[in-house]
Image (tube, rainbow, N blue to C red; front, side, top):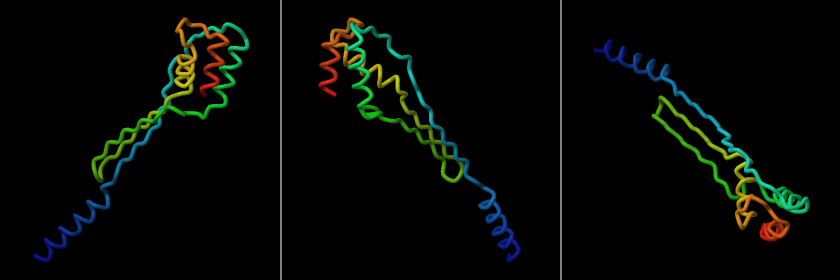
Amino acid sequence: MNRSIGTWIVLTATGVLISGCVVHKSVVYQDVERARIEFESDAAARLLYETLSKTPKHQNHSESTTTIAIPIVFEGERKIIPGRNVEFNQAVADCDSNKDGKITELEARIFANHH
């Protein structure tokens, strides 16, 4: 009986020691194509780009994290971070108030005053 208990303890200890945890973590920077936009003038372009350069990065965006775990055996985590073109495209959409594909100086001034 002592021998079977001893064997069981040794096998259990060996199993615990050699069983590991596989951990996989990845970060994916997901970007989109930059929106095509025209500017009425150089002043309109300058206003938009200056406003964008002054706003904090990732101001209105959230990161997405997915975690999958099987205790003691496996853990996986994937984090998705939106790229900078997402912010640019959102700013262009906000700035081009009449959605004609051309940003006027007035639209750029309104955008700059609200950001």
